[in-house]
Image 1 (spheres, rainbow, N blue to C red):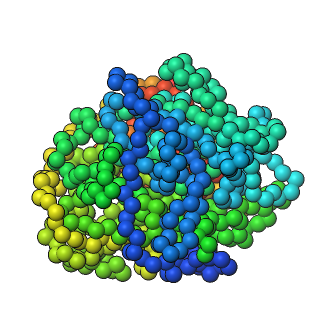
Image 2: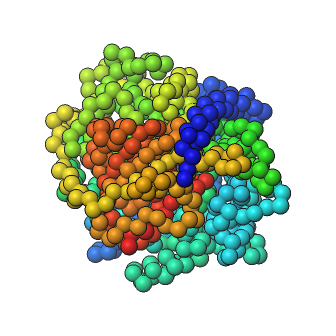
Length: 632
């Protein structure tokens, strides 16, 4: 039986300590040798980059659109011009080396028209040797572990002395977040693969535990064999039009691979759950657009990053960044490199720090995504970039959609709350504003892990996101005002056949170490902590509908993501019966679960296979706050 009193006491103490250490760590990062202080980065001098549309390799008349997308290392101007470029990783068309960037090009997809992507690990140098990670990899976690060979891969290795960072070839596997796909195409964390490098060390596993089995399943289903150093995934797109995104999901490496740059949009359009062209603001980016094309539908990927003075990314290379917990493995319980969270000190949108967008005095559709590792965003549009709250001239944010597509009806908001991985489809109306008017997208979320009580982020740095400058109107706006929109009907899920009780909390070990964990709760209230490698406990029957009660016993908010399903948020609060927030209505795949509350979601499991559910604070996900589930 879990000792709830010990864990709750530890949670309070550790929650306070984590907040203090995160604040101290932020200051230490800004003041350490080689750090680029965020206040030295000029704001609003870089025009916003709108991610271009990815070009398919070929299209079949009655079949899928085929893409061949690689992962490479390159340099990108993320900081303002005149400052050093940054070495990053990103996705791109393998036939167009100059098109690699972070975030990557957008995959534009159509409902019921399949997309097939061959994802290629090209993390090799000019001579064909593997590239080590840009960031420090902690080999003491339960992770992909290529040095373990076939018998020791996807495991938590043991050491006789505290190891340094792993410097070998890097595993990747891509997950389409929010997409419906069979298990062979979902991006399962143990289906990773290394690049085809000439110098893979002898004895290293080159693929994860499930890579070959899923590859054989894919070949049987689609007639295409996976090639070394790659995996081909099939997306049927048989779901509602929605804002999806793709990112790396390798076991124990997701936080690092995504921070290095592996993310991009996947926009699904059409079908009965979309609106006809012209109703919403447009155009959006399309293939073949000329440079300088004006867009009135724009994806905005918001991320936080820290930098060194040479332009390189900073991410902690030691657990000492957060605290001096020690002793480290194997002499103590603490991983020597992994940090419980990382909130960086500089805001980035679409791959540029603090960009500016010139807008016309008309309506815009913005596809917002919180792609931060650990930061919860509370965004507003204010006339004063340092405002604690919007000035009277501030604009409302009309939310029309979320993770799973359109909401039941538009919602006017003064602030927009987004946990990591959550999306919001919004309309902002600049109509009537005079040329030269300046407005700011600001962030009032915390600079620490989000809890019940917090101070807003630093108004001079992480409290600012981007700037809008109103220019002249170049054409008539024919889109429908957001308050007048008639959004597509949402088909409700069926009656549930089972309720599962699950929990998120800190596990307090006999060695006084504390670890974020997922729990199953029995009918008698007995709560069992579950590790990634434990037997599967959640096994919904195929085509069943279940309610999952998510009890958050921890001191912080956690964004919980279920793969391959879109769920309804039924209730929140101390008893799970309070009405969900307006932005949670409709269908979602990620839900922010608040501390001390129960969040109830209902999902229909209509795809057989092995998938995962996890916290989308990437540092938590990488250290056991993730569990498989099996649809029988």
